[in-house]
Image 1: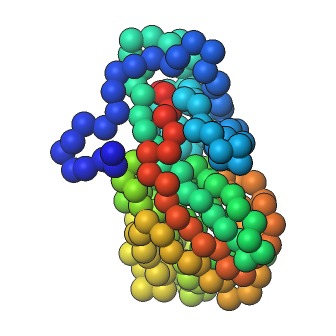
Image 2 (image 1 turned 90 degrees about the vertical axis):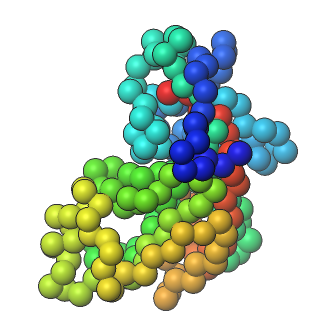
Length: 204
């Protein structure tokens, strides 16, 4: 069940014996994709690092994962179909941007963080929604926005469009390289997103 305001999210439960442990979002994404392609539920996974881990309060402690202090949480993943009908999933974020640092770009956030940047200040990986920001900043606003990104205060901005939704279609101005959890999966002009709520149990 997706998290609701004022409701308890997750439960006190340690990582099951033999369950996998990951240190990056890409490693978790690999486990999720492998299970989805096999038509099986993903395993319960311990988180020791990555942007999703930071978002849900992970400490990076292996000992904690197997102790009574551990918390087990149901988190969403996002299914992505690119314009050539390639199917993928991401656990933390999707990014598509112009070559170079600036220009039109788009991020879809399931986690709150992308590295040191708070690009999803309202994002919650258990709410059944993905948070999308797209657009191109005017030249004079770019460095101020960059300064504000670590605190999430670059939003709102009149040049950036934001959306929170459970499913949507992203149409890029031109073909872009799409990164899922920091891994390039190919170029696309269109990406269809659908949140799969409570798709995997993670332990922190």
